[in-house]
Image (cartoon, rainbow, N blue to C red):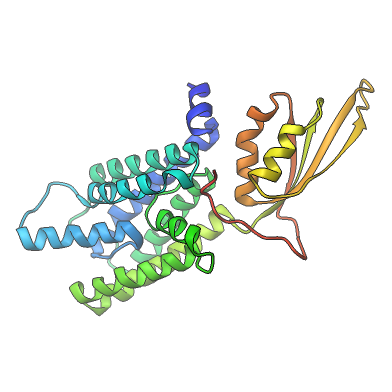
Length: 300
């Protein structure tokens, strides 16, 4: 099972727990705190929630569970098909699993008939913190919930002046604008407050701004490791030959500075580059000068 996880998802046991726990917490917060207050998420899931509301109003149906998860899954299918050549198979597999789990959890977690907390702002705060923490967990495991991140990757591949963050903002302006037209100004404002707090929590959870100093120790010349860092991560490296203090054997030390996502990619691929290599890292280092930070989790 562990070999399968490493081969298909490039995950270890710890990352599996983080990813599944994260998507469960996100869906739990959404169904227990956000949906009962008739509030909306941003992005593609927010669009799915709006479509769910329209379907219920137009066709006068009352499904026994929230169908927004199923709609969200359907909306993401063409996005993943379009993005296939831009993302790695490992990332694609991880993200598809997250979306499938998200669909399952949103469908089976019961939605209370009335809000659990009488104070609306308190409910929004609780829901935003829990959901943001959940998203941060599965992002830190190198998986995405799809949606605007996929759209952002496709657009920025053609237009470097845009970013995934900018695409997300543009998309959310549309979602919350429609939300305001359908449900009134107060629902729109509360939904925006929820989205802002959730995104702040996401940033604090998965620490996308972290930079790492990495030292890779190998017994053989690190040719494949250097090629991967230069070719796949677009970073330069410094390496030197040293002597092991224990048995006076030759050891190669490769040193590089990486952003958060690049570090995760290196850690996942290192066993395939050199089975006997190990990495020592120092996180959250200060970097000054010409260092381009790459926050894109869509590794190739």
